[in-house]
Image (cartoon, rainbow, N blue to C red):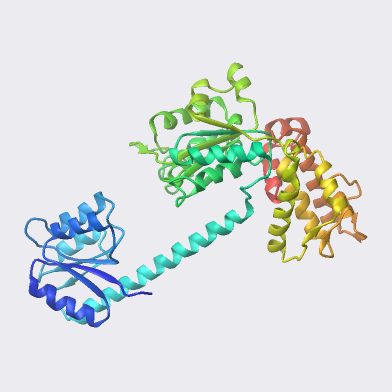
Amino acid sequence: MSALKIMLIDDDELINKSMSNILEMENYEVETFTSAQKALHYLETMGPCFDIIITDINMPDLDGMSFIKILKERNLDSVELLVLTGYGSIENAVQAIKLGAAGFFEKQADPQLLLLEIEKIKKTIELRKRMKKMEKDLLEKRHEFYLFQFTNKKVNGIFSMAKQIAEKDVNVLITGESGTGKEILARYIHQHSLRHNKLFLPVNCNTIPDTLFESEMFGHEKGSFTGAISQHAGYFQRAEGGTLFLDEIGEMSSSNQAKLLRVLEDRSFFPVGAKNALQSDCRIITATNADLHKRVNSGIFRKDIYFRINTVEFIMPPLRERKEDILDLSNYYMNFFNRKYQKEVNGISEDAKRWLVNCKWSGNMRELNHVIERAVLFTQGDTIELDILSKNSGQNSNISEQNGEIFSYRQAKRNFEISYFQKMLDVYKGNIAEMAQQVGLERTYIYRKLRELNL
């Protein structure tokens, strides 16, 4: 780690001189100021260019407490703060710590104690930097799964337009069949927005029970209802400063639509049991595979919400209308699952390529993704062959035997469930409510199965 940069503020030049000498002997870079006003002007001009600010409490013009408060108000508090106190002014030091200071040092104390305080702060700074690097690495690995460049001109046009409006912070509605890549486009918009360093939080509205909608979306206070044993941050709080992606918004009940309307209109919401409203600072991107125009006309979906979420609309085309992307996507998924499962499959045979291009792909990119995943798993050599694809595409009826291998009952059952639920997703176009009604299963059971089967 490079030498820490320290800003030292005290109206006594002798103290500044003696303390800066001590710190510089330990290879710290020190800049001294005789007033908090001068230090504040420097920070506002140069930005947060110091790792640590050491400031006296009692100073003319602008005292240390006011200085710390101003730093917070102007978002200049990204550095660690250490306060200097005179003899017998511990109360001021405690108050400074409540305002966010990392520690304090009495001027009459042994200078070694100052160096110990600096060393503790140094470890905190190093830990924060490591955490930020880990978060960045995790974010980059998470995005390895998403392909943002395509051959199809229509899709490229959509992504080009999305990039143009990404920084505008307008609400975006993404429509299209299930599995067409609506979340991929939403992530692309987030990555190219001014919020890209904050959280992208995807939420499936269809999985939230009506009785828990307010608690999950807006959070709740401790004791606000039976079972609320602690305070809970809702999705809007967790996505603060970032992007909240509300998928399957077309399936939201009318009562929950009304609850959502306020935050869309006023950018504020009440956690359950809270007396005061919280302000919302997150971008809203919504998606649905339903025809919202029909739902608005039939009264199922509120017109006022529709216009709130639909500042800009993108319609994702199905995979059958963009066949030129199929092989690129297949190769991308193949490489991804090679890394995931530590395989070395590096090609697709010509017969297999023709089969991939000619398939209808009613489940779109999601179906293609799962077919390639299973093909990578079952391929013994370095090339995906046609028989592997066709046997693992969900179209094969002999689920107890594949590639000459007899499966256990548990594996055969899993293969059947993957094939069955993938087919049902295709038939009902991802509409879980309709699927549950038609096949006689509870929605919660279907969602649990889809998560369990990675569908």
